[in-house]
Amino acid sequence: MEKIAQDAKAFADAETGHHIRFALSNPAWVYDSTRNVGVWVATDYALTITRIDLTLDAVPAAEVLADLCYANALVGLADSVVISSLDTVRGVFAATDLHVDVPEGRCIYFQFRARPHPAIGQILCQVDYRRA
Image (tube, rainbow, N blue to C red; front, side, top):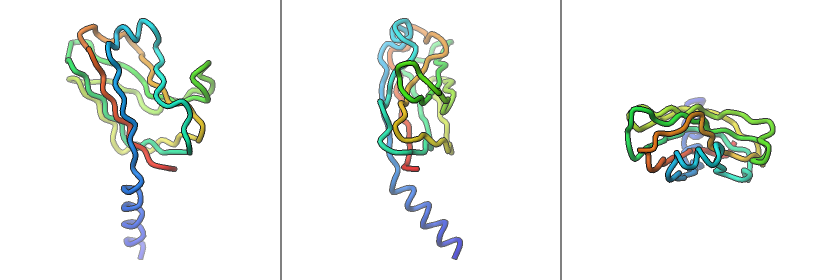
């Protein structure tokens, strides 16, 4: 009976999967303008981040160092929490099997930790989540 319950939960989780997809063009310019880029103004409900994928359009020697975070609001970033540190290797980053809970009403944002190489023209990101 326990195995059936586990299978049912896995199926239900797969059915409730959602994605946030975004692109950052000219990330070196963005870094010079602001180090925090809003992704979701306020979550509609509590959610669980399950995976993060990041891809670059170029692979220079110095790649992207950033964090995906959440906070009470983008203004002031009160009670900021790092969901995952993002460090690309050969132009990609993947964090799989994550289980990071984000409370309802939180702002999710992308935060640079270092200036991206100017050769990087675009960063593509996908964040997988499900309702908590």
